[in-house]
Amino acid sequence: MRVMVFVHATEESEQGNYAGHVDEFEAMGKYNEELVKAGIILAGEGLEPSKHGKLVDFAADGDRSRVIDGPFAEAKEVIGGFWIWQVSSMEEAVEWLRRAPFRGQSVELRRILEAADFEGQLPQEVLDNEARLRSQTASPTEG
Amino acid sequence: MPEQPPDEPSQQPSDQPSDPPPARRPEQASVRPTVEAVWRIESARLIAALARLTGDVGLAEDLAQDALVAALEQWPSDGVPGNPGAWLMAVARRRYIDGVRRAVTFERKAEELGHAAQLETEDPMDEIEFDAHVSDDVLRLIFTACHPVLPRDARVALTLKLVGGLSTEQVARAFLVPVPTMAARITRAKKALAAAKVPFEVPVGVELTARFASVLEVVYLIFNEGYAATSGQAWYRAELCDEAMRLGRMLAALAPEEPEAHGLVALMEIQASRIPARTGRDGAPVTLLEQDRTRWNRLLITHGLAALARAAARSHADGRSVGPYVIQAELAACHARAFAAADTDWGRIVVLYEALGRLAPSPVIELNRAVAVSMADGPAAALVIVDALADDPALRGYHLLPAVRADLLARLGRPAQARAEFERAAALTANDSERAHLLRRAAALTAALAPCSLAPCSLAPCS
Image 1 (cartoon, rainbow over the protein chains, first blue to last red):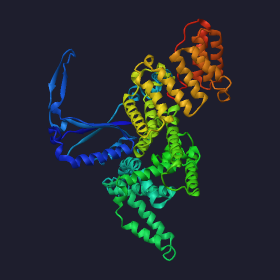
Image 2 (image 1 turned 135 degrees about the horizontal axis):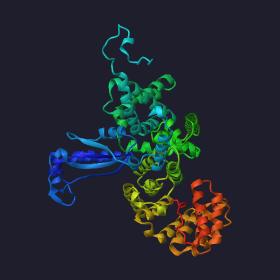
Image 3 (image 1 turned 45 degrees about the vertical axis):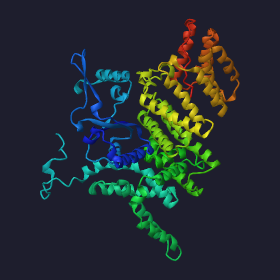
Image 4 (image 1 turned 180 degrees about the horizontal axis):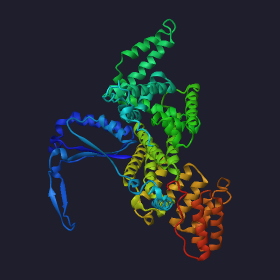
């Protein structure tokens, strides 16, 4: 399974102040190396402060949209970076994340939906057929 | 009369406290997935570090398993330690030192005891710190698990168990063999490594090339075990593909100077990107050229193409000739880069098959080249190649030879011969849906002299 790891921004990261954080960058580099050597990393990037970002707001009718310039909302609600990991379970993702050198910020883990989540494990026709057979063979007492 | 519910309070003896018992069981249930996750993350490093310590991979695994059992016993009550890897390492080392103490007498093996005492004073954190040291150990572990002294299936099982951190039950399920059979296979493999006195090291010089080829082969075997199967146990099969890709990425990170490691990663990722498109809604296989390419996993393609670029840069920098995994990845990339089947660069594919054939001459590669030639230069040129393969003993009974020939004949406007070849191919295949497909094509030729669709590229290693 794949998970997306959302790292929320901090006041500092929203200011784009990187120079004073050499140690943290080094620690993060080491952590990233660990993830690469474990073979779980599929993607991962840091994002520019939201003041350089754009928000496109779609009207309810879908016909109109307007563009809003950053920065957005509270720093802790803004995404500062992300990874995509391939892991065997959500618990594995949690254990990996616990090893990350973050301080005073929250990081969110979300499983990425796969085709199977939409289509089911079996071909739709098989499922349809199964449902039809059930409706035909179910005894009246079973309702 | 309904049965008494098991939690009926009246059944409880009166002297039982009314408070709920300590929540030990629920805790155990909730800690187990965490222990398993920690094991998956730490086991390769743990076993590798212990193997360097003890010089015995089998013993190292036993010690690591002891530590796992201790974790399952203690973490539910004590909580999960802050550094679980260091905790496991400390427990395993303690077991080892105790074992050495019991096994030796001071007079005879004073130096070993000294060694044990020295181990004891070291900080366990030193062992688990993720540095070049541990990375080297994991690489040694991979080479040991893939040692040619073992039969192929044992190499595969041991790699999944020791490097992948899978349980014997998981490995058995993935390969559809009974658990005791798999357990016996793994035990035999560990004994064979000990009996052959296989040193715990990364080979050097000429040996490195051959041993590295064995490692690549094992990882790709695991991948294909998952990728080739189209029915049954689908979930475990997908897990095997994921596991092989993870092992491949580990290998590429641990031995970044090896272009073939990056090539293998690229090959597996680009092939795996097509998994969502390989079967239709009815479960029937869909050939490469007929797949809905919007369903291909772009993330895996992007990652795979990046790995391929690393492989190319590495070969170029070292002036090395390109290996078979890089070439196969290049072939897969030709398809991945084409947004529609009609955009495929068949000329490039022909050149790549020629290169692959020079590295490892094989009639199957030649047949693949013929399919590519038919797409690049037309069916006549391809038929010459296929006809030259007609008497090859290696292809006797191989249904794709008449299937390809049939398609070429149909495209050349020779329906009677084409139909006979489709029927011959249908008689040779063991796969029901493939037989049905071939017979449909034969029947279509009987009905009309309609132009045929593109040749199925299903025999290509890149499919």
